[in-house]
Image (cartoon, rainbow, N blue to C red; front, side):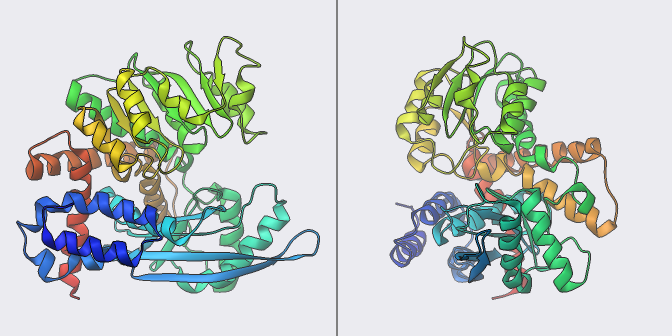
Length: 448
């Protein structure tokens, strides 16, 4: 699979040990593929067992959460926190509340977070956590009780210099507020232990927009560097109409592009007149699914209940912003055949390895998620800075800093690709190497 026998042995052992964790193994395979060009040049990687240490989390905390629903019934959920690597700073990563939460997904997300955080240039290690609790359909009081009981265990393992959680799927400002409130009562301190907080609780302006905006700033650099072009008049499709997808759409339109297709779990809307984003944002305030209602207001648009049909729409740029593994090989072929020349990941690992290889083989510009969607954690890092300084920056200040960070991330990936592969467009290898090197050197300095 890999050129290096060392890497083959490491991955074979890992695959046997975690055969029941496909998402985690997929993330490791994609990363280790990029390490082939480094291990021959630097024997210390094998000598100091760097890869073996990097693919095992430093710590996994598992616990149960017992709570009482509005009917007085006791409910029990499973929860965990994967603290993957702290070589360059305190652990940093989101909390996810969803039935899909399991060890494989949490490990893959924490592993990716390690290198994503490294690319931002900010001192943050990698972590992820969550529970199989589903907040949808629950009352505010039920969510509050669950969050409070969740923190009754997690508080022991987090802190501003230890581990700083944030929001993720199923966890927004409401959930973070409940968790932070409980943490403050237990620890008797007002500190930056959580990010994605409400503004009044010390949150940062621009956090809600950060991942979507940052994605577009990264794509902007790709267009400028590889094609000497901008978003102007580009036809764009976006999967996912949540926080990331909707904010990416907003920035695409602002930069002169035309969003002609969007999707959510209800299906896909194609509107050649340009998606009415104001309508989608309005509908989303009262509905979890909005695409199937869009045609009530724009009858010229077409709707499909099949979410993967988003990739059948002819476009210039595709931005997958929904979830992991949403672009399989067949969808990649559809995109290429319909004229798409650039794909950038707004979600975590939304493209399978086979699809990514197909894009690269067909000279499609590809922005990997660990680089392209790092805007969210970048602004979380800026929130930590503001908390430590007891001050708030304006939205414009935060956005300007985000723009610079995303430009720098692209440049790191581009430079690493040029130096180590001779293929400037290979941002996958570039992102993995650039993210790896900072963590690697810190691990060498700190010993075994």
